[in-house]
Structure formats: C-alpha cells, structure tokens
Length: 542
Image 1 (cartoon, rainbow, N blue to C red):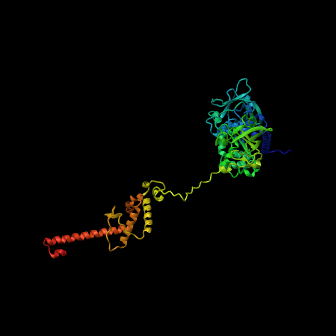
Image 2: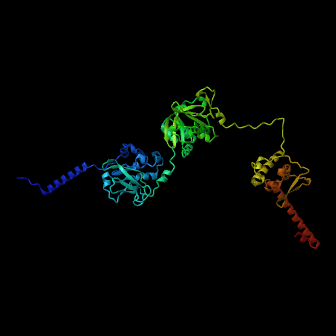
Image 3: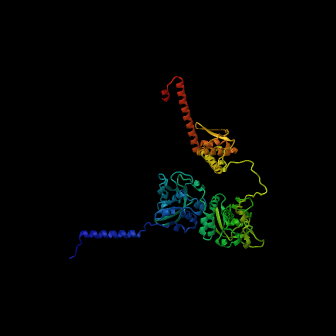
C-alpha cells in the first residue's frame, strides 16, 4: 500500500521550494553597492580636470555609501576655467554646483530615450542639503522629437543653467552611470559668475616648502621672520615667484657670511630678496626680456637696489646677485599666481654682502654691511673742559617741584606742600642754631589767618622756652627760603598747610591768654565804674 502525504505536509514542502527559488533569484540579480567614483573616472583622461575638482571638494565623501547614481561629468575642454582656479575657489557654493551634477537615479542611455517630451524631474544631491527651496534642487531632463541626446536644465529659468548630454562615458550597471555634458549646470538662484570672481585662497608658502622636505631651513626662517603674511598678500594681483634655497645651499654658506647672526629685520630683507613681485613660470624665466628684475626688498628700499639679474646659461636659468650666482635646479610649485623654484645657492644681496677680494669665490664672501645694519652705538655726552666753566644764567627750580617739565601752577597742592616741607626740613638740619636777624620777614597769626609783613626789630625776651625757640627757627627758615625769588610767593602757602603744628599751637595759646587778660581788665573796669558811682565794698566782691 502506498503511503499518502498529509495535506499540511505538502503545503510546507511547497512553501520551502518557493522560498528557495526566490533566494536563488535574488542572489543571481546584482544588488546596488557603493562604487569608487574617482576610480571609475580615472580611466578617462578627458575627465581628469573634473575628477580632480570633484576629489578636492566635500562632495566625494558624500558619495561614499551611495548607489544608483548618475554623474553628469564635464570634459576638460568644456570647463569654464582652469581646474586650478576651480580648486582655489572651492567653497560651499561651488560644492553645491558639483552636487547638482549628481542625480539620485540610475539613468542609462536607454532610459534617456524613454523620457517623454514633457521631460522628467530627477532629484539631485543638492536637494538633500536642505538649501534648495521647493523642487529647485532637481533637474529637468527633456528630449526633443527626432533628437537622440537629452537636455538637462534647472526647473526654473536661469541664465546658463542648462547643458546638453554629449553621450554616455561608462556605466556600472544599476549603480553608477556617467554621462558627459557640454557645461556646468547651475542651480536656480545661484550665481556662478560671482563665485568665480571671488579671490582664490592664498597659497601657504611655508607649508609648500615644508611638504617638499628639502627646504627645512628656508621654511623655518620664513616662519620665524613673519614675512609669510606679506608673501600671501602679494599673491593677489600679479602673483609672486619665490626662489627657495635648499638645505644643502644653506649648509654650503661660508663661515664669514654671518647670515644667521643678522638681526631679524635684516633677515627679513634677505628673504624678500628671494621673491619677485610677479608670477613667472619656468618658461617665462627662460625667455625673460629684461634680465634685471626688482624684488620685494626693492619695494622697501630705493629703486635700483636689491635687484636680481636673471639670464639663461648652459641650458638652465642663472640668477646673479652681484655676490653669488645660483641656478634653478627644479620646480617646487607652479600654480597661478604662485611659482616656487629651488635654487642651488642662497641669494645674498650686494647691498649687504661683499667679497674680500675681486677674484675670490664664495668662500671670500663676508657681511660687509652687517655691522652697519645694526643700530649705531649710543653717543656719549661730551665732557666739558675743566678750564672752561660756564655759570648758570639763572637758578632753576628743583626737578621734584617742576613736576618733570610740567608747569608749577598746574601741579597738585599736596605735591607742592610736600616739596616745600622737604626744603624746610633740609634747611632746619643746617640751621640747628637759630639766630635773630636784624631784618627779614615776620610771620604772624591773626584769628587763624596767616599774614606776612615786614618784620620789626625783635623785642628782648627774658624767657625763651622751647616753643619760642621753635617759632624763631621757623621764621629763620622762612627768611632763608625767601632769599630765592621762585619760592618767595609760596611762604604764605607753607604756613597755611600747617606742617609746623606745634608753632601754630603755641601761637593760638598765646592768643587765648590775651583774650583772658582782656576779659579780666574789662571786669576790673566795671568794678571801678561801680565804685565811682557810689557802690559798696560788697558790690566789689560780688
């Protein structure tokens, strides 16, 4: 008897067979994988400039991991300007232009023929940035009746925003299709002319020399001198041409040249002497018409100084400074507007270096004006002859009172008081034994106000205490100070500040004694008036 298979088991076997067939079919069909775009384009020399432009932008990193793309590549002859200018002007706007050439859909030539006459809107990589309003980050691909080539344009009308598909370059099925177009396609609202008119980024000369790995001394001198910024500023306009000595050229310098011992400003002159203020490729230097060329050092000096004599000799370019003769050994960097050439010797200007003898070689080169380039020694003050003495025409105020050249009247009151007190103190040390001059100035106190008047002959005093002697000493000091005309008008101010407080205290005490005596006399006068009017003795006591 034959064994029957249950219905449920048949369904399970059927489902397994279908799944196996689907898996095998999926495995046989190639799926989308990431493609190395630059690796695909490198096989086509006619797209070398566009490939280099794409590799120097951030767009290449954004393509990593993407598939099912169509790249609209521009051949070398259809780019609007040189690839170096595009690379120098690379920025966000230029990167968006390149993103606009990446279609997020795989379009083979057969797919272009199937596009209707009304066109097809295809999204680009620029749309994914979020900077494109509405659908302006897409392109409109259209074909005309009887035409085999498509036209790609921006959805909104914009000048120069369309390009014609020239043909298919290559394709990685279902992953990447490369189509050649006859020009750049500009997104709507983006001004390519404005982007191209922006000044290119300055070339870092120091980094160029460091990357060459044979100009370490020149790069370090350029970095330490601070003239690298001048070179980058001069790149705009006519450009610059740099003659960079190699490390072997610096090692071959004679011991007497003293280049490294020069001050920083003179080293900067030597570095400027190695730069022409114009862009000269090697071919232009070989056929230069005017051999005498000014350098950047000429701009900081007079015309005709710090010049180079450039000629062609023995199949190479020779550079004569008047002291040394060097040759260009190779081209280090040549990208308009900057050219950097390696030279066999350090270019020493004849304005700073010379030869010890006319027939000597480089070994006889010395720094002729290196000593003169340093600041001149400070001149010493001439010594006056002992036989000739010129007396001063007038007495001047002490420097402390003059305030360092300022007007005396503009000085502050505390400073003036301090100066006068110092003068009085010095005089007091000299005049420890006070005298009574026959004439001079008398300083008195009248109800708190200090007044000055011509002194009367002093009264004889039987009791001279310490306070009286102190007042006498102050008067003597004032008389001594008053002998100088510049200080005479400041006598009153000296006592106003009240530095001699003890003398003022004694004078005030005497004034109080006089007031008490005056009051006593008034009381006695009142008693006498009462007695004359018939008063009693009791009233007198009262």
